[in-house]
Image: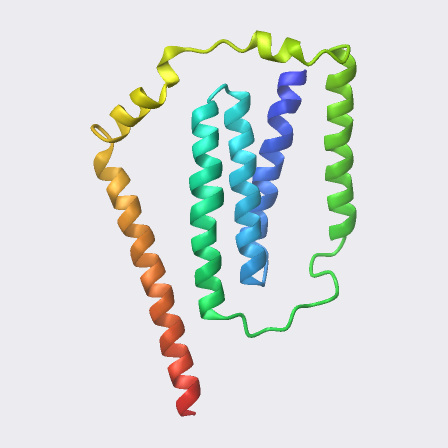
Length: 175
């Protein structure tokens, strides 16, 4: 039951973040929804004992790539004023509910483990399969082409966003 909850909560947050990315009107809110999705995915990796992948997920994607996205959003410029009212009806209630579920889950786990957090670390068994050397060896030999395609795709997307923003600003100046 606990394993199911440890999967269900982050998986629900992944879906909520993805829906925010799709349906939010403000580009900054879209980016924050993507951050929620990426962080929740890292939590799922941690529950699967893929700690290295989770840390890479947090550092590279939730950190560096999202910083790049936010810089592009700032360069494009969001011409709308911030709304002071809720854009999603019941948003405060939703956030409060998610917070309540997370706190309840934490209390449940704490009570079930008799407040001995050492039990969680004793249960983790480390395999040699997930070492950074083996992951890097596989990534930069068998998976080098997809790795490079993704990096080129990110560069092209960033360049296109900057070009579109520059062209839009240039047209506004001539009008």
